[in-house]
Image (cartoon, rainbow, N blue to C red):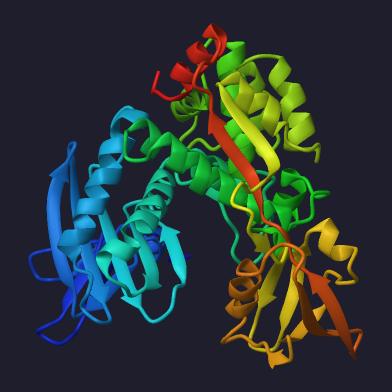
Length: 442
């Protein structure tokens, strides 16, 4: 019965430390929160921190950073934050929060990031700023957009979340996939990311990752089964973002370049907020009502169903050629295998059909390459050595399959470029028009 009672918090810590949080502080030094939910939604970072602050596009921005080695400081991260927020401002028709706090922890391991209404926290590997900047800007964009989805536009199950008896939502694809799409598009349209980098790094990496996942599971199934089948969960970020990319293109096509996914989200923001969540069963219908009847088929095929995404056809609409697989022109070889590494085993996660015909199988545990032990600390040797071999060069693998050791002789295959893109130099007038609409905030 005390969940709605106001709270005051006083922290005792060494004088040389700093405390970073979005919580307000009174003149007596107490932090205060309107209720328990506000306190739980406001992480605190304490320690030997650096700090920086700046008003960016009307928002008071505060940055606190802890770096295990001291190589990254808040002033540098403020530069990355400013770059992201200047791209987010036009994408969102104005930044949604009057104040926002970024908490960064750079240490010996990465643990991800979490969004909150007035702040976000990031835990990643400590490295020189120039080595982490690009990746961190992508993550900052993602976490910041969560202020819109799902911290504002969200279902009733999320708005009144029961931590003791949680009920899964069907819309994780929307919360994470659309957010991941938006984080890429705001940087692309804001000029912070080049089209070639968006295709090569953002889209291609997601496609390669999805190659390793079960294609027979729909986004809706992944969302609803996220508590029972966590192995599929990461696809809401990858497959979810890829699906949102195609949905955006389709919406722009159906509207003659007038309305895309960004505009639909703007409409949803006017209709729903933190106090007015959508019903769990109404989001798909509202999206169709706000757009075009044909979008019902898109949802049934690619979100509720598991129809393969029509990547080639949709990217052609914006004058971009997509190649699932093309031979490399440099004549080099490769092993044709993707390995999964853990402390206990190096196993085959994916393999090219040509390599599969040589006897290697998905799930095989590789213990040695050409007689030399392969383990967690050195498994990159497989990629390094096979990439230096000419196509057709034989190499020996010692594998463990069903508990028994086996010796296999495999051969390198010609290196292939998987999931390649090429921006057409001379698109048709229709392709050029749609591409221009796709690459800007309408």
